[in-house]
Length: 337
Ligand code: FA5
Image (tube, rainbow, N blue to C red; front, side, top):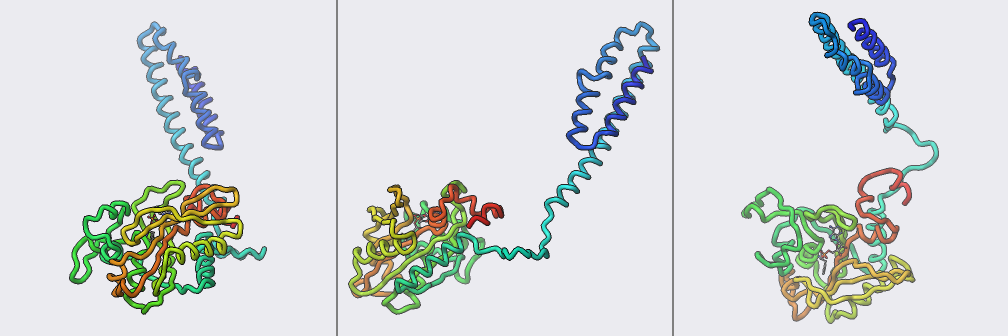
């Protein structure tokens, strides 16, 4: 039987040598070394060889052939895999020095576009832009906003703490800001009223990404502190903003809600021309305790504040189905906006 085994081995070796893709090679392996292959057929016949020496010789030839074929397959797989990887790299290579002669120069990301448009709209409504740090103290992010240690509302913000002990502080008191509301405190502490500011910025939460959530996202905060400010001013500002940002066909509504730093508090939704409502953010009259933490007298000054998600606004304005799509950096997606 040995010559037949040799013949089957040679046929298999030749087919392996001729395979020119990894997929082709896998097909050859199945054909020649699989259950229906010539070698498998011969192996079944081994038991039927009467002569013990001949049977042993055929068994040894079978074993040697299999070993030789397995080595040849491994070697060919390596060669083909290497070639295919090289081809793929060559195909997918980006020439970063390439000059695009078609005049296309890229553009700002849609979240940046929304951010800048928001600033423009609020500048038009008489606001100026304020800023605060992304790494915040517990005091600015929670305590001064009427969320003392152990306040249950802290649980709503899945906070990322920074492994840094500030001078005179203790571990766990520095964090990545969970919202832009600490800018309210920083502004009141540094600016004399009347205050009319918006503060766009990046915020961080231990949220699992899904169609409407990201762990890193953007908010825009609004703060007004002046004499005799009422809820009507808040509702009017939000409606003016909705029309200016989204267009005349959109409208807004306030729904009672709860935030520790505003009283009364509301959630605000906007209605699309198709009639559907979408929650955009929170707002309310600045709580007297927050005005006091900002170094002002709540008997003299009152105000309103709001905060909403910029990413969600970009998603809504452009009809993007999933917020995560904006951060995959797939050029085919980005180019659309
Ligand atoms: C706040 O963060 C409050 N600071 C808002 C506020 C400011 C209320 C001033 C009153 C006065 P909230 O956790 O609901 O509230 O977040 C506000 C908005 O941020 C949400 O309505 C949503 O638009 C957006 N947002 C929240 N979490 C995420 C997330 N993981 N990904 C994307 N957007 C988010």
